Figure 1 (cartoon, rainbow, N blue to C red):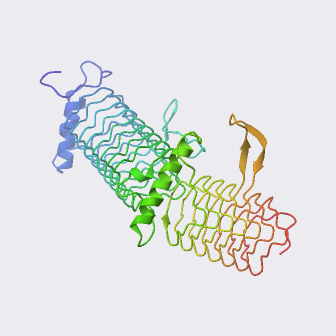
Figure 2 (tube, rainbow, N blue to C red; figure 1 turned 120 degrees about the vertical axis):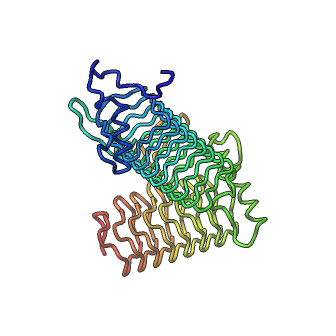
Figure 3 (cartoon, rainbow, N blue to C red; figure 1 turned 90 degrees about the horizontal axis):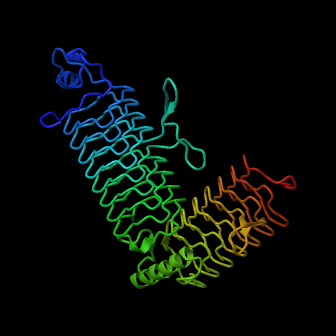
Length: 437
């Protein structure tokens, strides 16, 4: 290919009209972009151009729906606002390509080289189309939701993905070192084992994302939304600054808390073989910021968490008995199997929180057929906002829900003996058959 950077479609018929060749189409596209006579938008819909060399080509607003561009050479190309809906770019070289505003819904870029790429405002949500023989892009996440763009194992180092729409995207094992993801939407995305070293995730929306075993050394996460995110094996203290972990007006307490959480994270990751379980019995954490923190199994009995920010925190099987969580924020937090007996949650906010059971397992991790329910015996939740919360199977004996907002909540299979629900909002809530308002 020396002297000719463009490879023709290997399936093109010998003797095809010159005007139908790829080089001619590119010239027509260039004229179209300039609104010149004879111009025509490049349309390679559903064509096979695997391995084509389009280095530095101007493909702005080109129509590439369902186009097969696997292993294509597209480094330095201009794909601004290009239609790449369900396109196959697996293994393609898109180094330093400009793809701002591109439509990448349902596209596949597995193992693609995207170092230094610009994807500002690109749309990588789910999408699929039906070809003559098969469905393209019809991928599903583990929970059955339509999957977004597939960027698994892709190299996006130093890329610009500001405001990109990557909801439910597959970024497993992706190289995202130094990537600018400010304002990007990554709700429900799979970032398992992704390398986010030095990435800028400020104001990134990561609600419900899976960051299991992701590397976040020196990443900027302080204003990221991690509500409901899975952070197993992630050391949040290695971020710069450590996100969402602080005790107001007390730098020394903040450092100590970060150290406790780091040791606790190691304890979780090693199943108790290493690290130290967080022991914060009676700790004064009033107003503390613990958004998205992993406190699963931590001991917080009697702790003062008044006004604490715990949105998206993992508090599975945590001991919060007798803790004060007055006006604390627990939106989307996971409290499955937690001990909240006699806890003070008056005016707390736990919208969409999960306060349900955990499946019991034996020493080998196998289910034994029974559940460990969350327990709120004697807890005070007056005027608390639990709208949309899941309390399935919880022990609510003697709990006080006076004037609480339980709209749309799930209270099926709960034990509610002596619980108080005076003037509570139970509209659209799923209640046990024995409930008497």
